[in-house]
Image 1 (cartoon, rainbow, N blue to C red):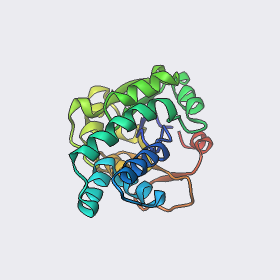
Image 2: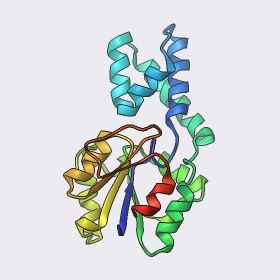
Image 3: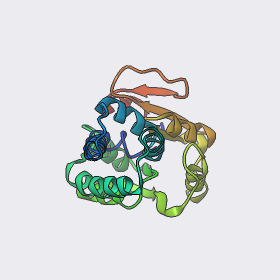
Amino acid sequence: MYKHIIWDFDGTLFDTYPVMAKIFKEVLKEHEVEEPLEEIMKQLKVSASSALKYYEKKYLIDKEFIIKYKKRKKEAELELSKPFEGIEDICKYIHSTNRRNYLLTHRGESSIRLLKNYGLYGYFADFITSVQGFERKPSPDGINYLINKYNIIHSEAIMIGDRDLDLLSGKNAGISACYFTEGNDKNNNADFIINNFQQLYFIV
């Protein structure tokens, strides 16, 4: 049984990629660039910063684009982004059984606001966001901070995420890793693979 469950945010706790991709496509179109939504999603799932660098190189997008995208995204996601089905129940279950949920994300305070908006904030023991300034995943720095702060036994902790960098941050910290995919993808960096959150009851 895992006593310490560390969650990624985008694409794991919350289904944010469709919202981000839609806004990205709209802003690209305003700059007279047509790009398939599926390709934008693919780039964003690597990371938001990686996607911006990719399109900056491909289409020479400028700072005006980046500012406009970030502003629109911030406005839209607070209204449209929602947690995946089953997230509230599993987080509540972990909390109610005297275990701990933690957040580890590259996002800033918007992640905290969304957790509060959907009544999830109280189920979490701690939050690692961009505010703390840890090196980005797959660095284990954020997880190591939690391990040291809460005297976590490595075998009792697991990192849950939808990208390799999430899983590798867990493996680099010496803990287990669980890969969430909406399809049937395989992943060699994962100890567990799930495609719905009901499956977590058999893991944690």
